[in-house]
Image: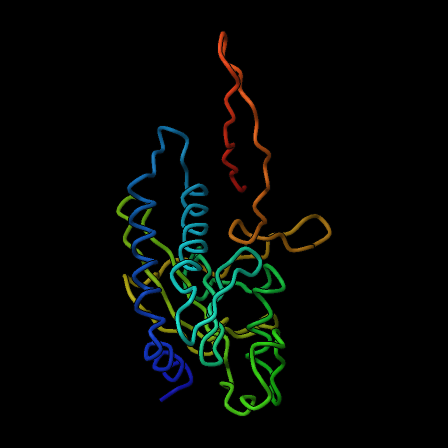
Length: 232
C-alpha cells in the first residue's frame, strides 16, 4: 500500500472525499447548465465560475465538520484533516502537464512533500507538538479537476505533488478519482513577462472588490445595484 493509498483511506474514512467528489460533480454540472456563449460566456468565465463555486460551497460544506478544518488560502479552498492538507486546482491539459510554480502556495506543498527529514509546518496552530510524530510523511494531497463545458461531466485526479522544477513528473503518485482520463496535453510552459517572472493562472488571481453603484432612473428615486465582479 503506497502513501497515496494511505492518504485516500484516511480521508475517505474521515468523510472528506465522498462529499468533496459530489460537490465537484455538482458544480461542473451547474456551471455547464448556466453557460451561455450567446451572452458572452467563454471558457474563462466557465472556469472562474467553477473555481469560485468550489471555494465558497466547499468552505460552507465542511465548516463545523468534526475533525476537519477548512479555510480559504490565496482565494482557493484548503481542507485540513488528520494531518493532510488538501487543495484543489484546475487541470488545463494532461495530468502530467500541471505546474506548481504559479504561486507560493501552489509550489509550497510540492516542495514540502519533496523534502527529506523533518517536515516544516505552514500553520503553527494546526499540529500541537504531541501530534508531530504522526504527521504523514507526504501530507500534501492535490485534487486536479476538469470538466466538459457542454455536458458538465467532471474528471478528477488525486495525487501527491512533487517539486519538479528540475525535471521529472509533477507527482510522486497520482490516480484517476472519477470521470474519464485526460490523455491529451503536453507539459505547459511557464507563462511570464519579458523578464521571466511567472504569471498567476486565472484560478489564483485575487478577486477585485468593487463598490456599490447608484442608478437613478428617469423620473424615479435612486436604486442601489450590486455590481458583480468578474475575475480575469
